[in-house]
Length: 527
Ligand code: HEM
Image 1 (cartoon, rainbow, N blue to C red):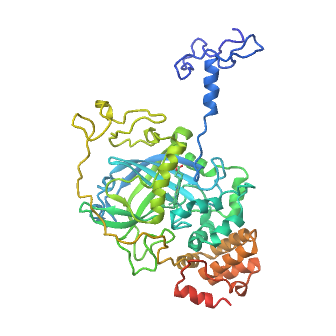
Image 2: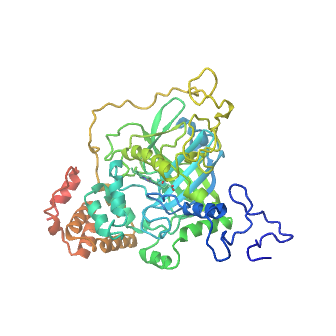
Image 3: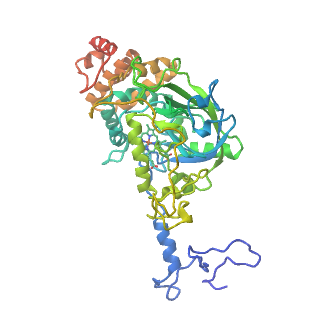
C-alpha cells in the first residue's frame, strides 16, 4: 500500500463504500490532490472542493428565539371526550374523535433566550411545541411551560426579546436592560412573578407543564365556536430548581435536560403528559375582570375547569439533531378543521412570524422536509420551484397544469363539509388601542399568595439580586409595581434594595396605564 492509497477496502470489509454526492467513489479521504507529495494543490480537485464547501455551509441561521432545543417523537391518544362529555359536541377535529385514537407527534422542548449551545439551566421560559401529524394535515400547538406571557400585543415582541437578549455592545444579558423594559410594561408582572419563582428553572424537560398560553377556538360540526385554552400536565410530576441547584449543574453540564430526556426514552421510561382543555363561550365575557383574549391572564379553574381530552407519550429521540431538531418548524397558523384562531392580538402576530422566519431560516420549501411534511395526509399543491424544491407535491399526474381552475386537469378545490361561516359577528373602527380590561396586578398577586413560604423567599431573593444590578429609577418603578401586586412582595424586595413605599409614592401611573379601583386604593396607601 502506498501512502496515497485508501485504507478502506480491506478484503472481508463489507461496510458500504464512501462516495461523494455525485455517486463517485472516494478512493482517498486523507490526502488532497497535489503536484508531488509537498504540493501545490490543484484546483480541479472536485472531491476536496465539494467536501470543504459543503462543510462551509453546514450551519443555517439558528432560531431567533428558542435556539436551544431537543425533539422527540411519539403519539397522542385521544379519550374521545372532554371530561364526561362526548368531544364532538365541541370540536369536529378528527384527531380527538374516538377513545384510544392515536396520532403521530413530534415534540420540541427548548429554552428561549440563549443560543443553540447555551445552558439548559437558564432562568427562562421553556418552549413546549407539538406537531400532530393528523389525517387532516398537521396541527402545531406551540406553547411554553409558563401559563402566561410578558406582553399581550405582538407589536411588542421584538422589544421584549431585545431586552432579554444580550446587550448589543457588551453581549452580556443585563438585568438593567431587562427591568428597564419590564418596569415600563405593567402587563409583564404576572409573567415575572412566575419566572423569578422556582418555576422559572424547571428541573428538566420531563418534569414541567405545558401551556398553549394564547386563546384558541374549537368548532363543532354545526359551526358553533368556543374559546379554549390548552394545558399539558406531566405524569412525572412538576419539579423545579433553585438558582443554586442550577449553578451546580451548569458547572459540569450545559445540556442536562436534553440528556435526561434522551436517557429516559432509551431506557424505556417513556414520559407522558395529559392534555387538559378549558372552555368558555365565544364572546367578550364582560362579567370577568380580565379579557379572555389576554395572554397575560389565566382562566380561573373553578369557573373554567380544565378537563382531560387525551395524553401524549414520547418513545423515540431524534435520529439526527440537524434533520429532525434544527429543521423542524412549528407555527401557530398550522391548524386543522375543527380548531381555529381567536382574535388574541399575540396569536395573530405569531401566526405571521413563524412561517416568515422559517422561509428565511430553513428555506422556502421547508414543508417538503420529512420532519415537516404532513405525512398522514395527502399533499397536493400548485406551489412550484424555489430553493431546494424537492418533489411535485402530488401534482405529478398532470405536470403541465400547475394552476387552478382548469378544465383540462390538475387539482380541484375540496368542497366544504359544512358552512365556512362561524363565530360571532365583530364590528368596530380601525384603531390602535389597548384592550379595556388590563388588570395587570390582580392575578400576579393571587399567584404570589398561592406560593409556599420557600417559593416566596426564592422569588424575593431572585428579584432583589437582579434589581440590585439596575439603576435607581428602574428599581423604584419595579418596587412600585410589586407593591401594587402584593404588599409583602413589594415591601420585601424594597427592603432588600433600600427603597420604602414612601420613596415611590410620588410615581405617577405609566402613560396609557389603566388602574382598577383596587389598584388606586393601594396607590393611595403607599405614602
Ligand atoms: C419560536 C415568534 C410568542 C412559543 C419562535 C420563533 C419565532 C417566534 C420567530 C422561531 C421559530 C423558528 O425559527 O422556527 C414569536 C412572536 C411572538 C411569540 C412574534 C409574539 C407575538 C410566543 C409565545 C409562546 C411562544 C406567547 C408560548 C406560548 C414559542 C416556541 C418556539 C417559538 C415554543 C420554539 C418552536 C420550536 O421548538 O421550533 N417564536 N413568538 N412564542 N415560540 Fe414564539
